[in-house]
Image 1 (cartoon, rainbow, N blue to C red):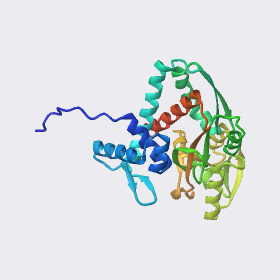
Image 2 (tube, helix red, strand yellow; image 1 turned 120 degrees about the vertical axis):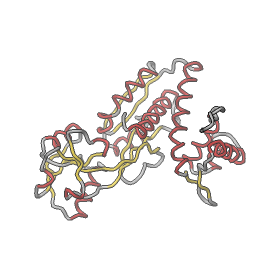
Image 3 (cartoon, helix red, strand yellow; image 1 turned 90 degrees about the vertical axis):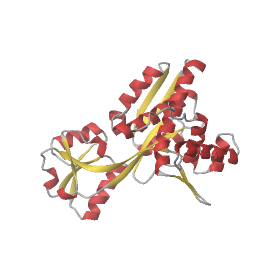
Length: 298
């Protein structure tokens, strides 16, 4: 018979978690120590304390690099959410009314599918912050950040997070077809894609090229709604993130004669001198995607 659990679980120190996140994001104990205003030795002691509490190593360290262990990667999501919740809770008392306007950019796909849920919940917790949304291609959103006409933007990329951006999600791009459809059997293959510059388009067409598959661009739209229309009417197949496949679609793969495309990355870029309202929006977006990784739902 198991003995009753007489002792409560230990509490994680938020200050230690802040240091842990800083190391994970910078890849360096020394650089992180500067950002959290501690000495490198103090930072090392904090991480040792954290690993002693958890009974697991959270970092792999050698002479030149620092990387997260599998347990460290799991902890990173929790740590970011705990820190975001702490900032949100404390702000209710110390700065009860954060007021301002935040200029947020997003690619069309996430602007249509995810942002309505994110912004609805954010408006409930931060009613005094207005969020102005710009929908555009990732390449143009990056330019807007450089021009300082946006405070935060989401970006999609097939090769890696943009310089200075924080990865929110890595997910496979798959071929989507209509349930019971036959578009994927036609020759040449009818494909629905976004405009030039879209990372999903580039990855999908490269995959078809490597396979030697004949195809034609049968439908082109810069909007997710247009892509869905082409798929559901069985006019074409289209590359979509795996999580975008709905009940009226099917994922097409090698057994269907469709080549593997690969992964894409969704990243977030935040202006370096972010104000309190901007930081609040960024924290809310981080927490949303960490929750999605666990539940599969936005």
